[in-house]
Image (cartoon, rainbow, N blue to C red; front, top):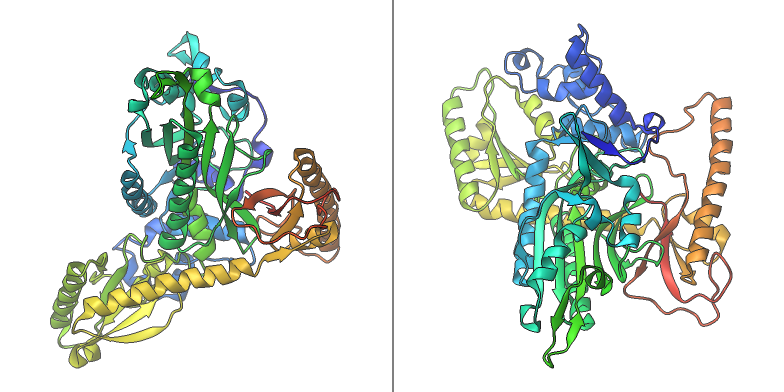
Length: 572
C-alpha cells in the first residue's frame, strides 16, 4: 500500500486528459452503447472487418483524424494526438500512463543515441533498487526538501504496518551513494561513472500532462565521482552537449544551454546546467534535460572519500545528470500539426511506409504488390526503417490518413503508371510535397529525402523558436514579451529578485486573466482555450554564451546593477 505524505486534493487540478482517463475507465466497466470518447477511435481503425466499408468515408476519416486544431485548443489537440496515434493509453491511476509500442520505440531510439555517446566517456550502465530507506532519504536534508512533497511511501505489507517505512525513489542519489562510499577508497578508483535506465515516481500535485508531468516516468540518471572539481566540471558540460545533440540532432528541437539560477538549481547541488526547450504554440518553456555538479555536499553526507596521490584523505566531487521521456512530449508539441504527429526521420519507429495502389480495373495488381515488396526490401537493405502496407482490406485513402496521423516521415506510393514508368511517388509528411522518385537506386534517393526532412524540421522549429524571443530591459517590456514567448533580460541574479519577479508576474497575470475572462464571457466566447499563456514567470536559464552586457544596464525587475543576461518565461 503506497501512501503520499500530503492529503492535497487533486480533484480540481486534473487536465482534460485525466478527465478522459476517468471516463474511459468507467466506459470499460459499463460498456456503453454509444461511444463518445474520441480517443477510443484509434484502436478501431485497425479492425479489418469494419475498415473496408468505411475507409474512404468522410465522416470516418474525420473520426480517425484529429478533430481540433492545434492553434485553437492546444490541450485537447495534444490529448487527441497522443491517443489517436497510439502513443499512450490511460490507466486507472491519475497521472500514470501506458506507453504503447509507438512511443516506447521512440524512447528506444533516444536510448540508443545517448547510450553509445556516454559509453565513449567511460560511463557504465548499472541498476539500483527501486526502494530507499527513510534514513537514507533523510541523510541530505536540503536535497530531500526539494522532493518531499512528491515522495510516495510504502507503509504496509498486506495488512501489517511496516516497522520502517520505505520510499519509492524520486531520484537515486540516496540509493546509490552509500554503495559509492564502499566502492571508492583510493584515487585509483576514480573516476567512477555509472548510469541507469529506470523509472521514478514523483507524486506530482500539479495537474498531470502526459510525458511532461506524470507521477511515474522513465529516464536515465547518471551519477559520477571525481577527484577534482575541474574534472567534474568538464563532464557536466560534456553531458550537456550530448543532451543538446539528443534534442537538436535526433529530435530536431532547438534548445538553449545555460545555468540554472540559485533558486532553480538542483536541491543540494553546487550548480545546475540545463537545456531549455520552447513550445511556440503556447509560449511555454520546458526544462528538457539537466546536468548537475553536486560539489562535495553529498560526498560529505555519505562519506565518499579517497586517498589522493599524497595519501591524504579527500572528499570526492560528484555529478548527476538526467534525461526523461519528457523529451517525447516536447517532440510532439513542437512538430505535430493538425493531422497528428510529425516525426523526424532519425527518431521515427518507421521512416518510410510503402503503399501499393491498384484499382478495380487494374490488371497487374499482383505485379505491383510484388514490386512494392522488392522496393521495401531494397530500402531495408539501405538502412531505412520501412513498413510495407499491402493490406487489401483498407483503401489507400485510409492508409494515408493512418500513417500521417502516426507521423511517418515519408510515404512511397507505387501504382499502375508508376509500375510502367519504373518510378514511385514519395510524399513528405513535413510539407506534404509529392516527389517522383525513380525505382532504380531508390535507397540512396530516399535516404537523401529523409535527411532533407530532418534538416527542414529543425530549421522550421528554430525559426519559430527564435521568433518568440524578445529582449526586454524594463518590467513593462518583459510582461509584454512573456505574453507570446519568453524574454531575454538583464538580471542581477539575486534569489530575492527572482522570487519577487515570480510573485509580481503571477499577480499581474491573474489580473489580466480575470479581465480577459470577463470580456470573453460578455462576448459569449470560451473563457479559456488550451493550456493558455498565464501564470507566474521565472528564470529559465542563464545562457552559457553571454553577449556583451552594457556597463550601466539595470536589472529588469529590481533596478539594481545587472550581472548577466538571462531567459525568463513561463514553463511547465
